[in-house]
Amino acid sequence: MIDFHFESDLVLEDISKFSDWVSRIIEDENLVVGKLDYVFCYDDKLLAINQEYLGHDTYTDIITFDYTDGRVISGDIFISTDRVRENAKLFLVDEQEELLRVMSHGILHLAGYEDKSEEEIAVMRAKEEEKIKMFHVEQ
Image (cartoon, rainbow, N blue to C red; front, top):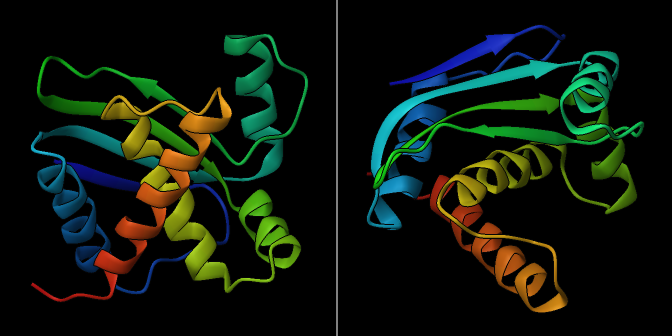
């Protein structure tokens, strides 16, 4: 089950399209959809979470809490819509594309991908691009 919670001004036009896409990402990784909660919030909430749970005093675009059990992908994915907008400007991409990148990034972490080393970052970026393209492919 995939749920979306909106604590910012972001509104997804067609929630079922996003839900179907996230399911396809997970299935494409040969995993199973469990319980996923996407929480779209402002910078201040994500900063507070970052400080309290990770001990980091910095803004970030995403924090993922992993509750995955074996092949069943579950977790809470918090996304700062402020950071998505700023990063879209910084990287000269459409806001929806940046949102898709961040949403897929959270799922990829839950699927076991990391982004600590240069090699891991390169794999993560390639996977993000692959998953973004899947959004535009109807089932």
